[in-house]
Each structure stands twice: as C-alpha cells, then as structure tokens.
Image (cartoon, rainbow, N blue to C red; front, side, top):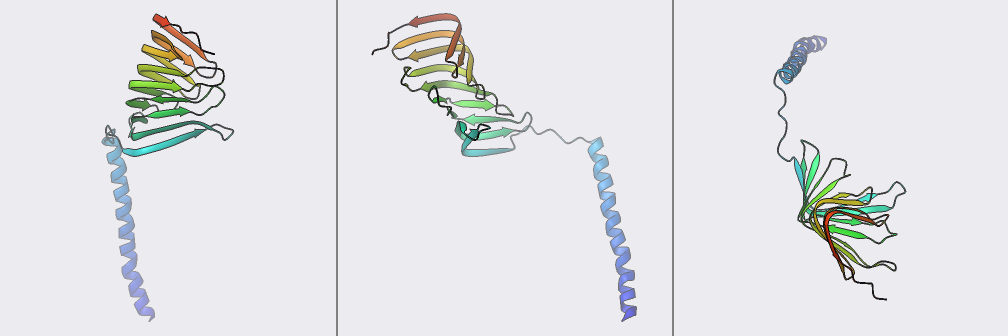
Length: 193
C-alpha cells in the first residue's frame, strides 16, 4: 500500500510541477506581449439599454431628477452615453417641475452635462405665482445639478401668451433668471387675473 502511494506521488509531483511551470510561462508571455502590443482602444459602444429610467437622488435622499429614454448606448472612449428620445424631469419642487424632451442627447461621464439635440422642448406648468412656460430650440445644454439650462442656438420662449425669441440663452430654474444674448424679439401679453 505504501509502495502504491509512493509511485502515485512520484508520478503526480512532476505533472503538478509541469502544470505550474506552464501556467507561469503563459503569464510571462502574456505580460510581455501586452507591453509590446498594446490593447487596442475600443471605438465601438460596449453596451446599450432599451427603455431605461434613472432617478438621481439628493444627499438628503429626495428625488432630484428623473431621466428616461428609449435607448442608451455607452461609449467606452470617453465614458459618455448617447440617448434616443430623452426625457429629463426636474423634480425639485419650489418653482414647479420642469420637463425637457429631445430627439437625442449625449451625457458626459459624471452625468453633470446633458447635451440635448433636435426638436428640444422644455415645459414648466403654471404654478400659483407663475404662468406656464415652454421653450423650443435645436440644442440645449442641461446642467441638472445646478438647475441651469444654456444654449448658443436660437430659442423661442412662450410664457403664458407672451413670446420671446433670441440667440444664446442662460436660464436658472432655481432663481428664475433668464438671459438672452442677442437678436432678441418679443411680444408681451399681460397675464390675465
């Protein structure tokens, strides 16, 4: 019985050593080839999500904004996302919720900038102290953490029955500040009481 164990150990020991040596040699060769031949950078999207919905929370645990779309594609080169038919709803309450829609959008890696393109529309319903607002443009830059919307393109703003158009815009929903940079035209209609 002891003789069989000795023979079995004598056969298995060189095989285990050979297996470990092969693994070590494989790792050395792989590391050497990684240094000589760099891994090609991925240029194709690496994943996508259909019909997604995302809610960002504040530090206090309240919903800050809701982001949804029909398709989200991840770009590994810069860790950005391409969105089809995005809808962004600002859920911070004091000045009323704000909803933005577009044909497509690009979101940067830390979700701090949302670039919305083609048929962009922003809606804010009427509240007790403000009229309903609608904004139309071909491009908006949304900074959701700051509650700010910017554009360097022409915009058309409807506030109640009043209409304001211009090129280049800065809007802060939290402070209700709105600035148009140039080519400003407007029609003011006093609010009905």
